[in-house]
Length: 272
Image (cartoon, rainbow, N blue to C red; front, side, top):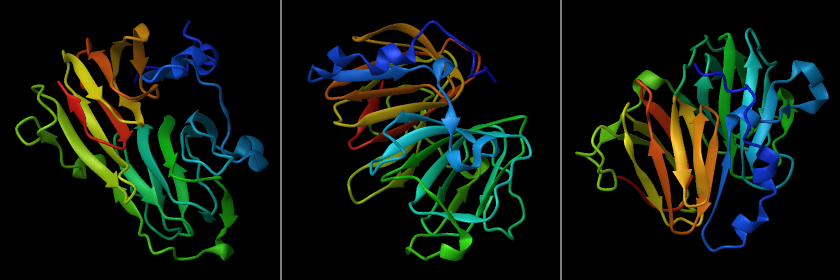
């Protein structure tokens, strides 16, 4: 896999401070995975905690947030709960997330899971490098002892990559590009939803959206990205793109393998 931690000339700080983009009705932001600044998921545990970096939102406040979390090989958390529900998508490595007594089911790149608030569980990592995208709809993201477990009515889901059902342009109205596949992984009563899109090797096209919230994270592979507000840039796994309003994301996959993108949005989008 392409190393998502190497340095590049694209500065995250410059992107975050680019207020001119947000002055317009149509605005975007691009965060290269190569320039992520890492902290700890659970600062109280220090070096024993997984590394974490917010891509959008702020996991320490009462807001929706999307973040990257990385684990060392052999990591296994003690049993615990969270105060809020989260979703996880494996970007690299082998991840396990289940009840403390469950046998290990290692989930590879592209696997998806949900962890309900209050549900007792452990998380473990088995790859040489382990990286996930973690998303919450409200914060702050907190860790609590198992003794405080509760049932919020939701149920956990572990969806191994091999069990995901993908649809293509023959099945989907909003996907017209040949070879592109899509799968829907979650939805909510607030009309927000999450899906994943696979772009084949050689793909050259556009993702069009008019959503007030459109957020995309590269799960695997790499591609060349540009837009009306962003010059040509190579994005690897862990990179992040967002837009608001009527916007076109131009993508070219020059590699020999497919790339997978996770998309969180509150309306339909088109892949052409």
